[in-house]
Image (cartoon, rainbow, N blue to C red; front, side, top):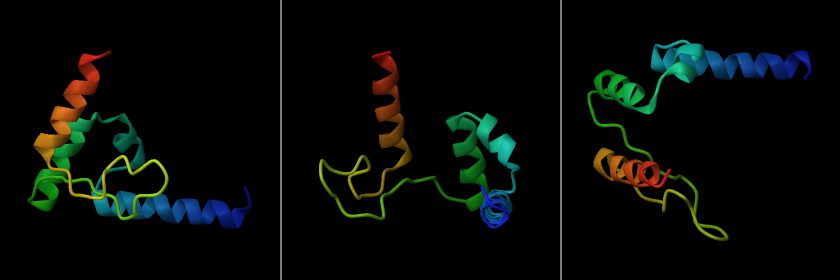
Length: 83
């Protein structure tokens, strides 16, 4: 990795940290429930995931639509119940 690439990486990390108000190591150490609670409070609305890309090939994991907290929780619970 060159110095320029390292600098770009540092910019990305700084952008994430400034947007979330959390250091990158804290973000990596938090579980999804804690992250969701933090972001729900920070942005005053429930956290949603969506895909900004069209369906290509076998399809998008996020189905190109907003996924609400309840739907995401159901999917995670279903996945974990099979483990």
